[in-house]
Image (tube, rainbow, N blue to C red; front, side):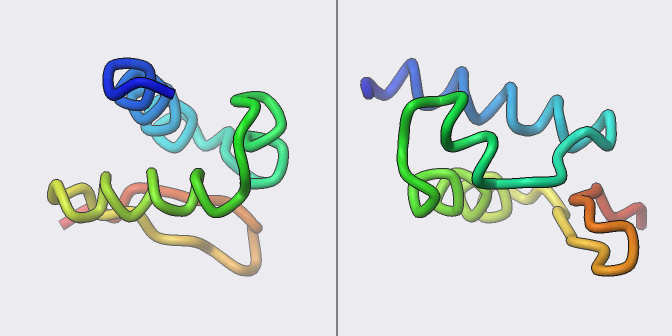
Length: 67
């Protein structure tokens, strides 16, 4: 996966989180054709860039934390 492909997938990952559609990292990994660990790294990269991403255990969804 090239740098530009990875950034595009990170943008799509953020889109899924904004819409409340991200429930399973495994499904995203299969869709992207990469490992679960790679998707976790993408999430961590988004967090390092300043995006407040959280996981709700009761709803089983990722979401953006509002300040």
